[in-house]
Length: 466
Image (tube, rainbow, N blue to C red; front, side):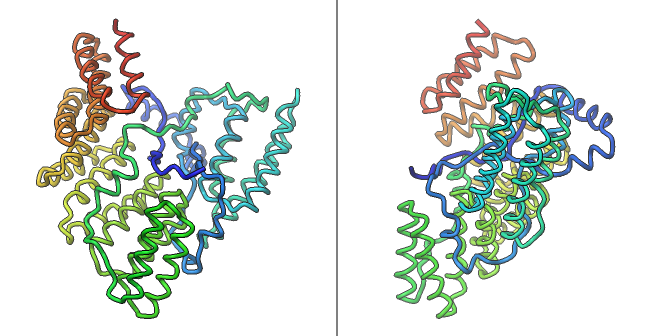
């Protein structure tokens, strides 16, 4: 089975009411004790896995990858999860086991360790099918399995990690149903990945302002092109091996810029196939070896996206700022605008009005470009922010601008999604006639796509109005 390179790996969010979200957050913060907040600052796992059966991480780690990088932890914030659990703290062991297995996959656990983890999980699965599961035994095995994953993360990053064990400890504070039931899903713990967000291919295009690169040394040129062909052919193992050979030659001739671009290419391979720690190491090495601001822009943006995906806010913002800086030197306005909008989205998710300062700057820069897709992204992000803050008139204006830009960009899926967002606001204000008109427009554009889920959502909403 091949690798799926088109999955949307965006920072997870929780489904919640669209109105009064700021008031809810304030109420939750007032009701939480200092001890609870300290427990809640750790990170949880996102529910996503890979579709690649033949996983052999050791083959993906040439010697030049053994360097130290910033700590990468497992995503989704306990602070949000615990606040939601205050309304419904019940979670079934089946849901926990699924997230645990997907976490092991997401961090690229080697096969030998994965087998050891599976042994502990098998003991748990045997227990949960019993009439009266032994909760102490289940918890003990979960802790053991978590310890294995944390040890792997610690060795990979050369830094102590307890993120998986902390996640397990946070779950133990909830009301766990140890009787296995896959149908019992608590939606307040369910991690989703929004379909309307930019996918990996679009993200790359936002900062893709690098002139075609060809090394000067003839032998190095041949090796570099061969490695690129392997990469284009979606042969990651062969590509990385080829890049390793090219790197050795680049070291021989002391070609720093080619070394940098090799690390950038290798980082992208790891990134595309969700080996996040290895991708971060490669991107960091790329930045260290180059004076090319375009390359630094791409590397910092890629690192920002990884940290953003796993909800590591501080390093994500730092790398987005670096992207803005180097993109400015490279006169890459699309990368500047996109990165500023990404920062705005992070602050918006935290309900901080600082977000609008970044959106304003992103919008100003985007208007200086002819990139309608980036303009649409900034406007749509601004619309989502206004909606979160309950400022519906401004949200509708932003969604309208996003629709216009996405029509210019020939992005029917994005057009449909923004029409749908505007329609949902109209429904909340009981203006069904206006909502129906917007939904019909959304349906028209959705039919031009292959997004079955979006078409179904629009149709179901229209039916509910009728």
